Image 1 (cartoon, rainbow, N blue to C red):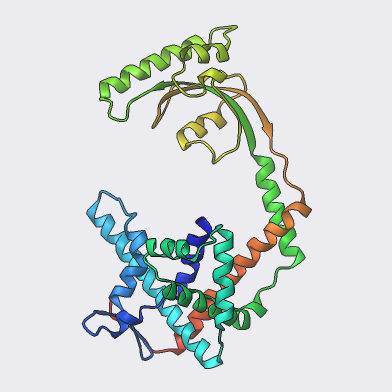
Image 2: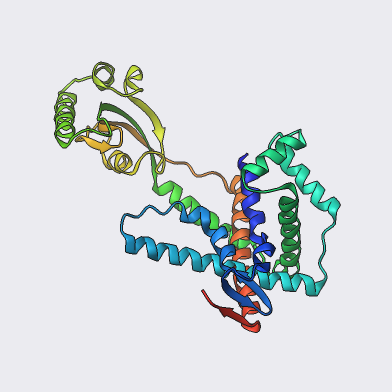
Length: 322
């Protein structure tokens, strides 16, 4: 299902709004040459991002909303300009090609029944016809980019070696940590007094854990309220970016054998002990090369795409009314 949603998102770069364009009562967000972008099109495009705004400050919320709306409108303007180029160049896509792409999506998501696929589309607010149109426009866009942008995108061996050197430097500078922890749980609805009482219990455990000869794993089995208690609080080896920030910051600051002061997370208070640290061995160049090449190609394609759209916009008549 993730691949289906991802493909929907990619295809949506060309999702139209022809019905909205026909609705003269709809407010006009922009006019691109002689094409109208309706305000409803912009709102529909940005709806998922708008729903995730949760800043408690009304002013900040309004600023974030305005920025998202502007970004969505700029994207729609770029799409309209590219649609004009596609029409001018006579780029087409056959029904068979759309069929093939639909079948690929169904296979990737293990969907064998057409009715099941249509039901999933309906859950995303799409019909099979509208989804096919999105895929058709995706094919057209890809073909336009191959003609206009593709020849400019070059990934050289020097680019790859420089990218690998940066990757290897970051990997070898960092380390992995093997840690254990003891958790004193705190209810999400706990009062400040209850939070403080839990902190004091965790602090007492930390003092106990630092006693000479203390077996931290045995103490965790006896005192921890977390799911890893039966394993002696063992968290195994982990890199940065795996644990919650507050937990991670302490884990990578402690020396081997050190026990932390209580650390607060959404789960409660943690007392950490770092058992070992080790350097991370960088993956070989040959193994990383395909990933680095794909990453650099994508980055360069996006860069030249931005330049291409900016060039189209400079030659077009674009009137923003939003």
